[in-house]
Image (tube, rainbow, N blue to C red; front, side, top):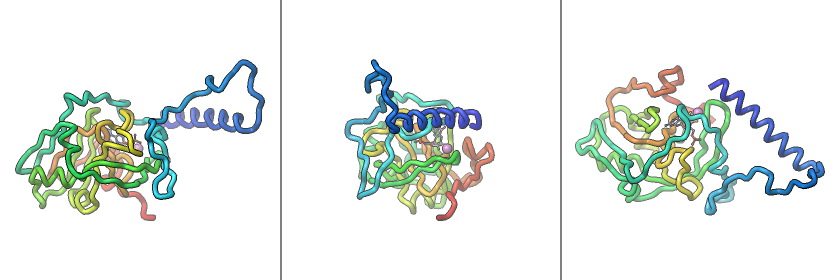
Length: 227
Ligand SMILES: Nc1nc2c(c(=O)[nH]1)N[C@H]1C(S)=C(S)[C@@H](COP(=O)(O)O)O[C@H]1N2
Ligand SMILES: [Mo]
């Protein structure tokens, strides 16, 4: 993570320098036009303000996933809900989304020191767990992802806090870099708890399960420092 961070910092510094020089009235080099400057993709309907609060863009993030952006073929995609459940589920993308949708403005904080405020929309993990007939005395929910990533959250935390499985951010489908088709919105937890490209949700009694970063020394509760 360290080398990548240095690279990102370097890129950031160059971008800031470019911005500063662009704003300080430095004359444009003849022959260059605005079309030469880098264009930032903005999905046409992306929402950038919510209840008076400025939102970050779907493009404001550092791509630091363990294997880079994953491509999910949505026709072939299935989400499994399994483990301590009476009715294991295998759901298509539409079947996951075909239930009450919820919206929440939540900040994602990465341990590397950046954060983004995003308006998330998706279904409640607890609604999926209910449909699967989950064992209410189980301990944790384990998320597994297309890139081999995994992480877990306490079952009570997921249910009591109405944790979302988001399919949209700022009103647009999650871009593939951000976890299309689904990312867990693990509010109040560090970013490494926010599983992207989720393919299975396992209800488990293994309270000591450790996910990818947790195995490498990150705190298993993943709690953000108290405000
Ligand atoms: N499948 C998968 N999910 C993942 C990761 C990953 O590498 N693979 N990285 C985590 C980390 S460390 C962070 S900070 C967030 C970043 O989410 P974002 O790309 O939506 O900003 O995704 C989390 N979820
Ligand atoms: Mo992170």
